[in-house]
Amino acid sequence: MTHNSTNHRPKIALFEPDIPQNTAAIIRSCACLGAKLEIIEPCGFLLSDKRFKRVVMDYMDEKDINFYQSADIFFSKKQNERIILMTTKASVSYANFKFEKNDTILFGRESAGVPNKIHNIVKNRLKIPIQDNKRSLNLASSVAIILAECLKQTKWT
Image (cartoon, rainbow, N blue to C red; front, side, top):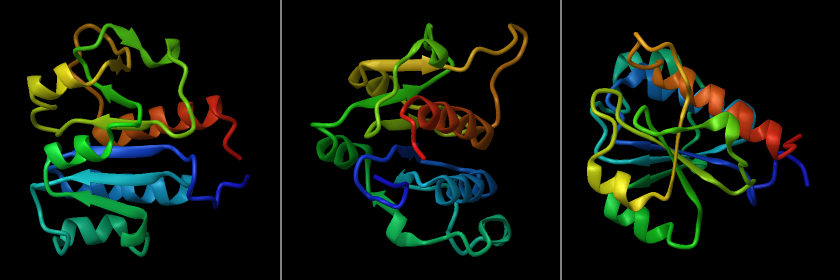
């Protein structure tokens, strides 16, 4: 199997993203590394936003992005898939977790994370350990760290 296959590749899901430059950078990372991107709407910006277009450049290929109109629709479509929530509220480090090729890795909204309802739905919750006196990493940086680890563990080549 090669990285061009649409089967068994990691999926990055963004819950209601609200910073266009982060979403655009994540689209580029997913495009370059062969991951599928899923966006749970509503977004806090339009895809025609100049800031979004400046960063996404020509990496925007909507056939590689699934849009879900709500979290309820997203979770109903994912009933038979493993979802991992990346959150600063988790106690388990991503470094102590075994990723699988078809995982969906969910990231919360930059300004607010995900609601408690979603924390309660998702069984696997992980964090990227950071210094005690810091709040969080940039979303695009966090996605890159986790996607690289997932690809490394699953021997994606």
